[in-house]
Length: 237
Image 1 (cartoon, rainbow, N blue to C red):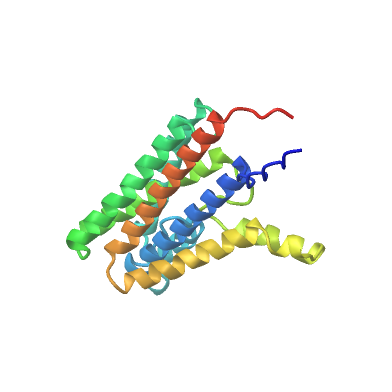
Image 2: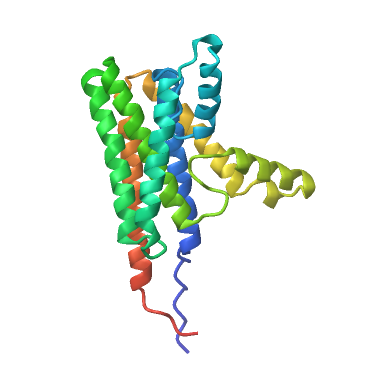
């Protein structure tokens, strides 16, 4: 009797693939938020909760906090998320050409920001353009992540994720409730902020160049892997 051939290694499921890719996008949010907060007058480009708070305190004249920049970022984020959601609404779920188009535009906007900052990072108009472009890109990214629908990984907000993680951890402490996707999302945005701050020590443009490159990699990997998975013939049981 011939020996049976070894079984091939298991392939990542669509859920695992999407989880990993959304965690990587969460990492890019940390990068651009570090650049925005440290270089653009305390403005968040992905985490809009922070901008709402800064806007409210700035309107009261607290410690010279800005008003226009966080308001611009907030409006650009809303516009990006809204337009992307309308575009995706009539398309199929998953890594469709429409979703890839949204992520492509988001990546291009961040790349344009890198170019602007590479030419003249000190120009006021260029910096405001960078705030608007990147915040719109993050809004589009958030809409795409919502369409993919990985639970607990929105790519731009971790407050609700931290809350759910803490509740589960204290309610039923175990390895599964501590080391999970929620903790991974928190760690990825933290790591992204660390990388963004380190890149800023070199110059401002690499912050956005790296974020754009990582986003482009996620977009290509997601589409190619999803297409490959869909082309695989069904195996008989």
